[in-house]
Length: 539
Image (cartoon, rainbow, N blue to C red; front, side, top):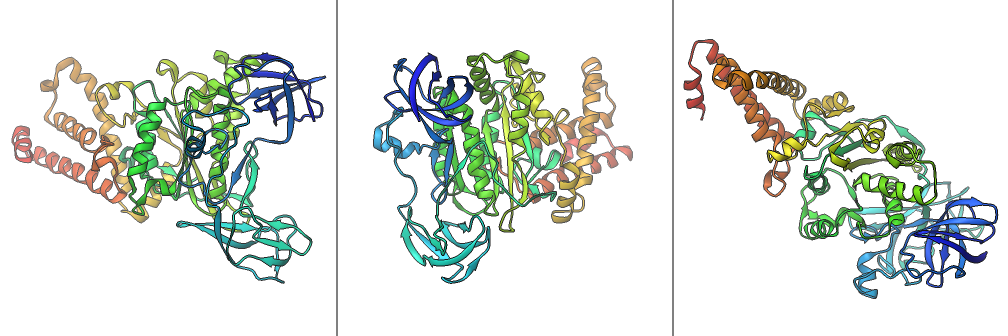
């Protein structure tokens, strides 16, 4: 169905196209700009346009597409950089130049034109619903092609190379299976059931892995003020985490930061498999100068691509930087629609939208019986470093780990600036038990000893500020020397040196050495030796 534009307010456009549905994609204007129906009223529909509406005029044509915003899933996603609408930016730059053209500019194809299919079934065999007919290899990854609907009898199946857009098998009733399929981004992908398995996700950051461990399929947030190292920390985890696939979303980030990250990812190697980092990475980019509506859609585009690889049985990590800018886009859209504002102008449904998004993380049993996981890590930029603002508080109610980035630590050049008193992980006990079994039975005991020392040091620091360090007892002075070593030699990591990544074994060895030196020195103090002598000999 088609109609005309009746009103324009910034990126919000009213059209008189009959028969539209909520969230249906609509093309508006002579340029064919893409938008989404966000409100339906008698005789008109309100469309939020994903692209710049500059030059758009009332009376220009508008038409519904009949589908929601969808992404194309299949081989070729790995190593690509997309915008919030899954347009391949590198291919578009080669075809249209360095600036994105709006509307009718043809989106070039991405991925190989010819693929190789390895069948697991033969012609004449019966295939059940959601059973794997075969797979397509993409580097180390296998894309399974499943039978949909009620299954059936295979009439023809490819064995070897085929054209990417051609069917890979046909059933006797005429239905076909393809290497690619589309999926609406706002609809979670199906699975058999969610699992309660808890396995550690090694990030390579000692403060996280040791004090606040993260589980596969879990969720975490990094709230922090300006300059606390959110972007560097997320990029370090994207480079070094022990996962199969990384999906990184630059949501409203500065263009120079994304350009620097892309340069790094193009040259670095994955430390777990010694492969180029981009060979396991998908990047969705929606920088701060791109349209705000596409920014709101970008995290849904990214999480749908992540779910696709989760459904193939892989461990996937989704990192979004930053969720605050996504929430600001949501606020701007809500304001344009004249909706009732909630706290600080954010829409009243902010918390529920956040919960729906975070709920897409987890460990699942896939439709074909495999186990896949999707872990979500989100950075937040609270205005003025105020953690009581709505976005941080909404995430605190739905995520399992909270890594508070402290401005004071950042000013002291302590990175990662994770505050070890305010942060927490709900996965701590289960994951630490796995580390006890896999790394050392002393893991949990050493973690508790480290926390105890840091807590005692915090109390002593208040006394030392009054009486001075010289006024403390020798045992207390030794404790402060030990905690200083823990902070400088264990909790701090330089993201630009070899120390950027630490295996669980290396983490355990380093903290065990520091604590063993403390125990030895404490024993010598109890025997009457002077602290100065002990410190001089251990220097």
